[in-house]
Amino acid sequence: MTAPKGFDLTDVTKPVNTARGLPNAHYIDETVFIEERDAVLFNNWAGVGFAKDVPEAGDAMPVDFLGMPLLILRDQEGVVKVFQNTCRHRGMILVKEKGNIRGTIRCPYHSWCYGLDGSLRSTPHAGGPGVNIHEDIKRNELGLIEIRSHTYMGVVFANISGKAAPFEKAHADLLERWKDFDQPMLHSGEDSSFKLEVNCNWKLAVENYCESYHLPWVHPGLNSYSRLEDHYHLEERNKYSGQGTLVYRQLTGEDGQVFPDFTGLAQKWDEGGEYVAVYPNVLLGVQRDHTFAIILEPKSKENTVEHIEIFYANDAALGDAYADLRAQNAEQWKGVFLEDVFVVEGMQKGRHGIFFDGGKFSPAMDGPTHMFHEWVANQITAGRQVAAE
Amino acid sequence: MTEADLDAALLLAHEQNDSAQLVALYQKAGLSRIDAKNVDAGCFYLTHAYIFALEMGSPKAVELHEVLVSYGREE
Image 1 (cartoon, rainbow over the protein chains, first blue to last red):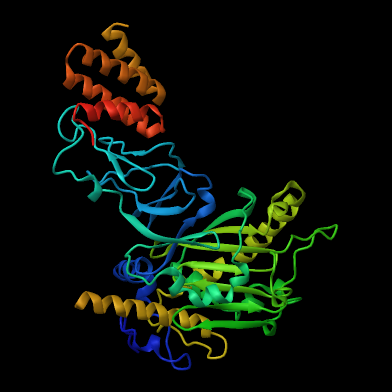
Image 2 (image 1 turned 60 degrees about the vertical axis):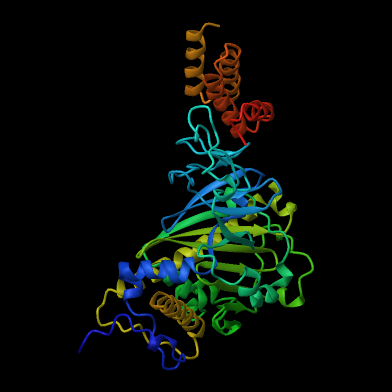
């Protein structure tokens, strides 16, 4: 028996019945990890942060996304923007800690100053002591580098390469599918926020999230009310994939208390819930009374941080009267996601088996996961074609 | 305030990250140099006042900017 080939993706893009999953190298090889960083994560709309972390004008939060220094900030008009967090002068990191920018961003090195719109406002002593101008320093050419960004369902998406189609176009199908949820998502703070550090490649978390096949085995608590046959696949080829349930049951407090619903939802959401992997690294879930968003932050080829935030429909749900129910809800979701940890970490370890060939999909049950593999393979192939040109 | 007192106050303001005080003290230092006909030194200090005013969003940034522009030191 010989070890399977490492980098050929032809088998990955075959139909699910005959396809193989991504080769081991895509989970354990540093070179491929870097290749995927550029071709998969930087070249598409990746989740890099949450808008709720910069609630006020001037709030700024530095983010290190796969080594890329980003600054998420809310400008004076209330719009969330993303900049490269690097001074145009000597490349110094501009903002080291989350905080509010009252006036301008001042580089801690030579004090070049930038407005919240990224414009270069002053270059002290650049023309000599006490002279802040120089004919060769053209401020209008030296503003902060803005990264294309878009906020959806509370998540700040960034297209670092700048080459992706506009977010509204790239994700038009999902936006249409979930147009009922195109309304404010409110966050209550720490009681609806948690993160999990998992020892696996980020893609394994996507793959596990996409499919319902594992639910009866890994989440046996669901069997009593949410059976496998109550779920359906969500498959939009080369766009997104995931799963839906027909039997979403609202969390109910001891006194019958339930969270208030989002307004104007279609009837399908009375007992419906949908869980979508927004390629590459964002996992979203929507139900009648709350949504959640997970950003998978790849820390290395075999380490990922899952940032999980839960959102509610209106201010009432954020009040003290719902504090216990919110805590219960967060605990419930955390319990579900913790049940998945041994799976994704186990698959990571399994991919060090040199004879593993990417795996054989169940044509009936693994469609959403295969769809993600196919999309990743297509991104990598496209990246290789660009590199070869 | 002697020059030594001013220097000491500036160092303390830097230590305490007291932006408002930094603006006030650098402005004072700058204007005193301007009064003494030492425009270069004055603009050096006024630049610092301006930068800290910009950083903290102080309305003083406007007047400091005007002074620096008047001496051909700012855009």
